[in-house]
Image (cartoon, rainbow, N blue to C red; front, side, top):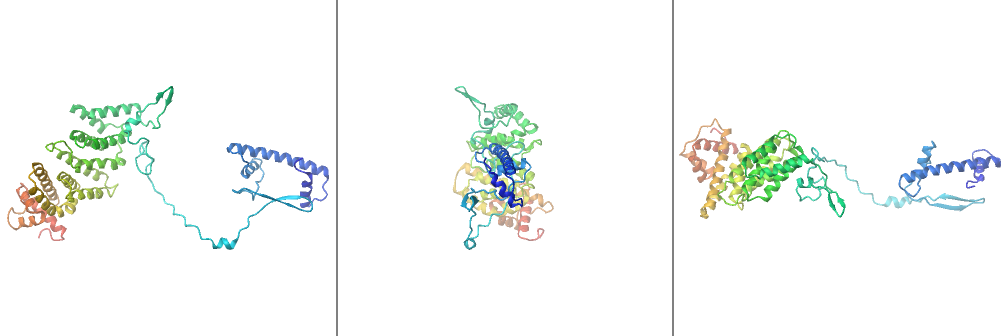
Length: 444
């Protein structure tokens, strides 16, 4: 017998039952041993289901709960229990050796570091079933490969073994075929085929899963075709078609689309020959950036300010080429009259001084042509100021008003302004805006 009847007799005496008969003590010991076997067998089940090979106190307590027995208190511990043996006058007993703690040493130890405060942040895990490429989300596998090509990967068989790619197939076969057909049509020499593809992008309601792929297509096209004007025009047309499709939710992808637009706006060179019309591409990019700021400016309050800061830096950098200056001027003008007043007009005279010196220094037809476009862009920026000063009378073409205009925008640009048909109105608006910036009466 594992559980001796002498233990039963000792327990009975401790609770006030002296001289328990041997037969009763033996029967009770057998019953206790049977109950212990039951509890241990039940605890072993919990141990096996927990995928462990070591029986713990938690398993014993779980078995007791199943048997509707109150669990054992005082032995739930994470450290290993060590039993010590001691001998008494009658028998040997075992006990748990408690650890002695030196309170003086504990009080002299330095305090632990203060834990950091709990901070919560929010970000998009997925938008319409597509994971945005942001820092908080895990990077996709084989990131350099185009996303549409990853989605079309099929299992490969080699030596009788089927290899399944790690990339999830997030696109249906119909959408994959649609994307391939559209991208092939966009590079078609037939303008009717290209316009049909762009129209499909702008009105189709079932391509929301392809938005991220079209945005990546735009970025890759701009990156790899900085000297191909037709490809860049196509990329800008795709961007415009995506934004004008009212069935698509393109707001989460604006941070990926804007760099491509800025590249087409202020890039140094966008064509093979300078005689090609890359100016219209820059104007189109400026229009789209202005529309994005107007459409999403309320949701992203710093969007227009960050774009304006980037364009102003390009405008005021004398090391940048004139093509970049032109794009920056056009972009700032399209952002609104207030941007023109605050950022463009105060810097026009200084810029014209540098531009005149640059054009006099070099006898280069391309440089002269680029400088003329920059001058035209500045005149258009000043013409935009007339929207806020419709009630001001145009100034005369001669006299002190012309001298005052030259002090604001420089002699060269003042002469070009007065050469315009509406030069008097433009000059009046520029002088009024300059006085307003200085806190003077506009009508004085």
